[in-house]
Image: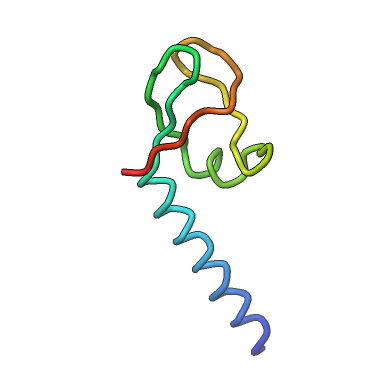
Length: 71
């Protein structure tokens, strides 16, 4: 019972931190300069290369490692 409670608390904390950072950051395309945000699930579970997120620009469609800016 105690381990289950610790697991639930840990999951709530992880999701809360993920939602916070997902809402406070946006990405800038390295090709066209477009600013965009990712949804929480794409941001949290997205593919990463060297601590950067590999994503597709919604403006030009280029797959890239975008520049991350925090609000």
